[in-house]
Structure formats: C-alpha cells, structure tokens
Image (cartoon, rainbow, N blue to C red; front, top):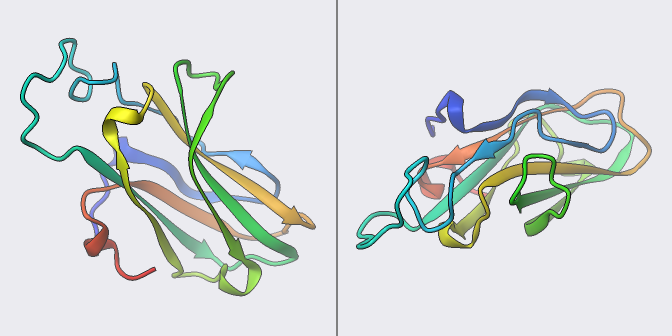
Length: 144
C-alpha cells in the first residue's frame, strides 16, 4: 500500500457527479527547483519524475466513462492549462478499489501549479468517488 502525504492529495474521496477539477491544486514552485525552493537545481541526483495515483473509492453509475487529465499551469486559476496526461476509464472499471497511475511525469516539464481534471462522458453519475495524489513509487501503488 502506498502512503500519500496530505499535502500531495488532489482529491480525497471527491464525489464526481459532473465534470470537475480536483478539490486541491498543488503548487510545485518554480520549474527547475526543488519543491518550494527559490534557486534552480544545480546537480539533480535525486528523483526527477513523479507518479500520480488515482483510485476509485466508491462505485460509479450512469456515465459511459470518466476522463482523467493531469494538468499544469503557471497560475492557480488554470487560465491556460497544459494537459500532461490523459486516461479514460470505462464504467465497467469504475468500481471501488480500481487503481490507475500516471507513469512517471517528468518533474522539470511541469509549471508551478498542477491539478487533476475529471470529465464525465455520457450521463452524469449519481454516485462515485475518487482519491488522487502524488505517489512516490508506482510499484507501491499496485497494478493498473
């Protein structure tokens, strides 16, 4: 089981009954620096990629599929968001316990602000919850 820091959670049991952005936005700071550092990385011998873990925590109904997009932007309002990764999960797979993960997002390609955007395809569900956050190792998260 992966451990997720409360400061690295985008969605914590977030109810998804319509298309929506994650409850939380994470500010990684200036590109090319360690998180919240003010000076650029000179010699990066540590991890240079992050993983995003997404888990269905309550079964969904009604929709056809759920689109999950990992976005980054230079402002917290996401006025000009860049989509870094997308995935679509069919209703049959939107069951409690389903885990998926974005495989290694290059940290140096991100702008300061990141979020997850959920797009409901088909009818709006009446139930369904997601937890999503930054995970240290994809292997600790489990299989796709």
